[in-house]
Length: 354
Ligand SMILES: O=C(O)CCC(=O)C(=O)O
Ligand SMILES: [Fe+2]
Image (cartoon, rainbow, N blue to C red):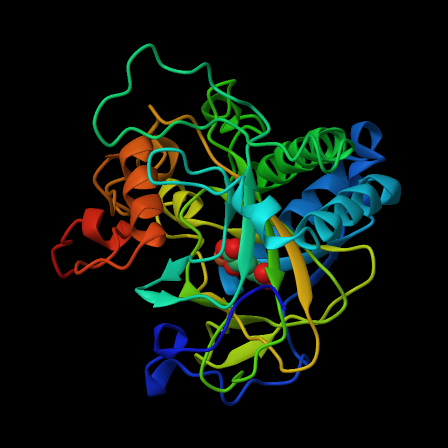
């Protein structure tokens, strides 16, 4: 199934194999977003909601949202298109395969931290930047590859899904800004028409060795915010900050899982921290998930927001260019490299010991 066959490339080092995973009890916070719908006349409700989002972002870096306002039918249509795509014959999927300079489309050989992931993916962008007149060495071309001939409804399903996700992403960004004591639209300017937001469709086929391999190896999301749909199979594990245990995020009907990525960690000057997570696979069920990675434009310089920096709380990171970070990370996921992945830790300032 899915054309993957178990070999050494998928085997995790013993310390990273998915052994003990805690049950979902005392897990990731569940947040009801319905106060957003009442927004304008309920300032107190919004502030309380922002405080909840802030606490979850601080304690976990992850939370599950329900009553989020995204129409069920839009999610159902996207999910149906996703399943239909991965059910296509291997050669039809391979016709849309990504390559090094053109990272969108189908791919079945992603590596996370140099170990192959037990999954196949399809990446697409909601906003296609115009193709550059000349492509510089190492520059990536973000052009969608649609399965138009096989699945004529696919593109429309994801265009409407992306629109709904963007609306939710801006609302979440406003709640995060409020929770940090900032103007609600403080971060909006980073997400103009040049944003590098992308949607990934994940398919994790049943795996003959779920004790040795992972669907996605442990990692942190590099962007600003991730909004993930997962089906009812389960497999996403989050590293709990309080004790370093891996905790399974329980599937909840009609919910999304939200996590703050590295960029929010940097903007917030470490008030919020992006959490490590991974995907465990199982031997009898396939699993589908769809993350929406909300990312700024590639020219954005990422650094702690000035309102959150002071003499008492000096900037903990040097500014870095998002476009460079993003393309370096994409290249290292494409094939096995000898070097360590780029990390925000590389931009961390050495703070004098107080
Ligand atoms: O499939 C999932 O539950 C999570 C996938 C993930 O972490 C990622 O694609 O970055
Ligand atoms: Fe992730």
